[in-house]
Image (cartoon, rainbow, N blue to C red; front, side, top):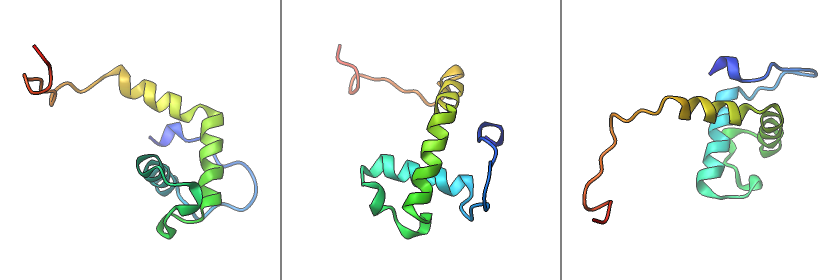
Length: 86
């Protein structure tokens, strides 16, 4: 995943690493909470939001999703009559 994240540009380097920022974004998407309700363990919500906007603008999420759907892992796929109506 290292090659997907855009390089840091200007200013003081952030103390928030990319992994923590991505985990914070995933937590927000799963929980449906507003940005301001981000737990403190993920850092400032403003920093996470800025990183999110930069990644959206750079097309990072599109690249990651395209990579994930390119080679789906069907090893653990299981369908039976409780899932599919006959």
